[in-house]
Image (tube, rainbow, N blue to C red; front, side):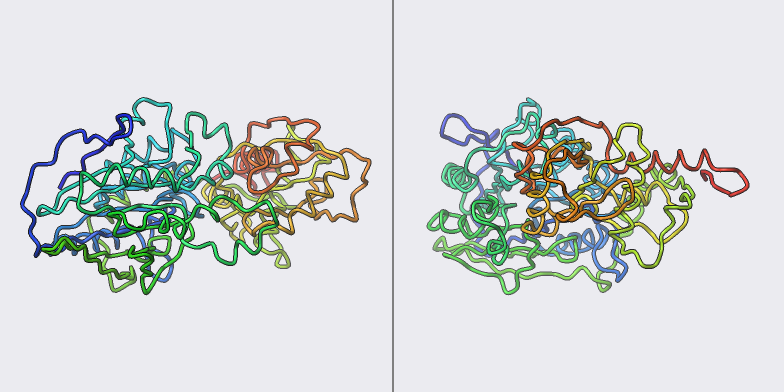
Length: 503
């Protein structure tokens, strides 16, 4: 079963090749398996659920009994504290391709490494679809189409994909160079569906807009509602009513929708997140042209055996980087974890010590690193491995130093209380690793802030910085780099008798 790309020619979608005519077999039921928000969760969780090897088994068993198409609704990679997130998109993409994926939409995390990361995703050998993103790279323009179509026993099925426009507020401009979003993701999808309809019997939308932000909208201050809360699948359904769209296979908000909502005649299917479930949609076309859809979620728990071929492939991929990641260093005495600190406080404290020791940083600075960039947890150990550091500080963004006055710093501190948990940060003084409160601020003083380049641009809702910053200086280091450099330096300068060193 081949997927044929369609590209724009003025206002028409033109297929690269024509699908051969087949009479429709009205007894055929096509199975479409789908996941979303996989986030590089290649390994199973401690309870045995999830993992690419279990998903591969689910795909293989389904293929043994019916025609199957395997798709994903975005965020295939990054965005989770796994060792696979530290290795770029390539290893995860290759293993997903081996498991049987055929088509995937792009999520915001898939664009964390910009066009380079997208090219790594293509290493998986499966197709990528995006109707609301334009690429400067000619190869990506060719390889990532706004729509695809295929034929199964004469039933012509079209696919399009859409990515949350909030990506521009979640990924720095430097990283997104050469990647552009159209103005309205919902309108772009509607236009694509209308142009796709003459070629197919039914359309499936792979959406990374989010199903229903619900209570999140109520938490946002006036005027700061992200686009994901305005351009979501509920609005998409309203604009696609009466089209050939039978289902939206969605993601971004990590919903596991059961029972499947059917809105305006369109099934809206989300399979949760992290590979713990696979969505199964059964699609048929009756003799009178009516599209019939059934949907269920398949748990990827210990009852699903791991596919042996994928287990072997996973371990081969792991061997390629395992040795370099196992390098370990003793923590310096002042950074050894103490019981009264939470995991987040341990992360903040170690990062603050590392920044304070860096020659590139003013040690009187205040560190503001959002929770989004501190996804993992440092082990409660006196020795850390390189892999522990990279998992605990997974962001690939560079850090920056920003200066602003006390009045604007106070505004920034107050803003943190209005942000969602993954956007907000705890301000910590590098000099003593202590949190900073509004009461500590002198309105007339000038303060140096260490944060990420995204926050410096006003991303993640940090709207104070763009206008308030008196100066911005790029540090050209990431959180993981500065922490590992600090640990190596501390180990190399410690007396040999103490046992500090690199193993």
